[in-house]
Image 1 (cartoon, one colour):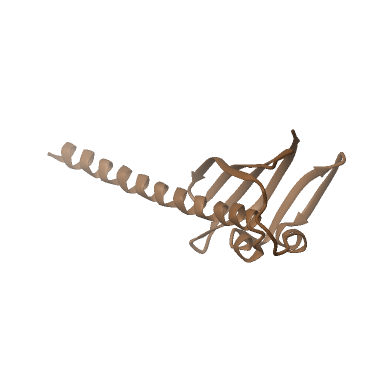
Image 2 (tube, rainbow, N blue to C red):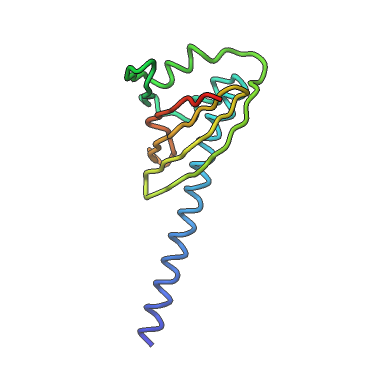
Length: 138
């Protein structure tokens, strides 16, 4: 009898963990979608929902390492206007406890950005804390 109770308890625990993972996965997906939708629609207010205020963006430009505050950067470059001609895709999301990572692909007519986002669950809310990216020609 105790073996059955133990097995049942383990099953319920694993089901609850699975549900939590699914819920966190959906919340991470929603967070990175703020970034994608805000960029596509030139909507800084939507985009900023994805980022922690101290989030960094790191990249290589003309062979030189650069690091900037993500929100300060996007606030300068995103201006209201027509929707951008681009296709977006969430290639993957991985969630482990209060950490997550996502690979995003943003395809423009002549180039593609490949973004890697790192997220933390802060005060119950998923936020991008760092982004690295690569601009691929063609």
